[in-house]
Length: 376
Image 1 (cartoon, helix red, strand yellow):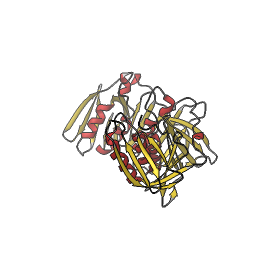
Image 2 (cartoon, rainbow, N blue to C red; image 1 turned 90 degrees about the vertical axis):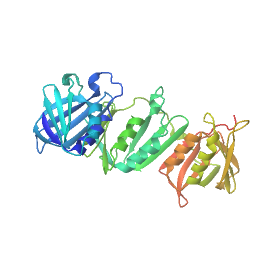
Image 3 (tube, rainbow, N blue to C red; image 1 turned 45 degrees about the horizontal axis):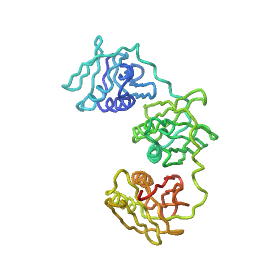
């Protein structure tokens, strides 16, 4: 193998595939990045990583004078590529080592046994495309509600539902539920599919596509393939789907509410942050709703206490409700709207948070949060 590639192109490609490298690989070769160079066309270099759960692939143009394939330590290559000077990079295979040269910098890296490296899965059939920015925003809004508790594998995922030209994402950790709906472009107008993807993987992938315009989502045949794929601009990634029956959570959304209140989002976020400064062990923040205002309280008994008051528009009787402050802040931040509407029935039933713009509810994102007892 002998090739020349732009330094920024190499760093970007290596950084993309390095995401799939396991921190503690079950096999040493899974810590490697597979590099294939071909002289076909104008010259192409392909980098691949695979950990049996997630794969990543990136292709880039390169000046290839001699094709070939190698396997080298992925994390080491990623670190080297990150700090190379802004000059062309030469990669040459010499016996069982590669010599990487960039300007005056020279690195010699041992290769790993290619015969032990497992072949990554192929990208499934395309299901449709979605705007990359909209998709990344939707994933960020929903993934906050997925649990990080690996003993509940189903709840570590984000459920993707394809219903024609609508793509719906939802997640829950039993204490909160987030759901976001957005438009996309399916390959079939009557498409109907469901997939459960690990939230951490989906979040990494959606953010990594950066300024890409559209992302292609691919899904295998139901009950045959357990792979989902994402692709854009010469980069691909696949992930195993989470297997199991996701809980029926849509019934948690009430058809009507007895109480609703509207507040300025920034004022509410800042007030929650202030009063929660005195909290210990994630103590709740209470919101007392009354005509014209919302009073926030934190702390009880002999503990430090804090209170704050902001303006609020109340529709319904006076009431009080309390929340885990971090869960509350997660939802308020995810809304990203000037105003927030809080809707509820009783102080023990889940409370719905939705964004408002100029008095109109933003219906495509809902955040449902279970209240907790205050002062206990």
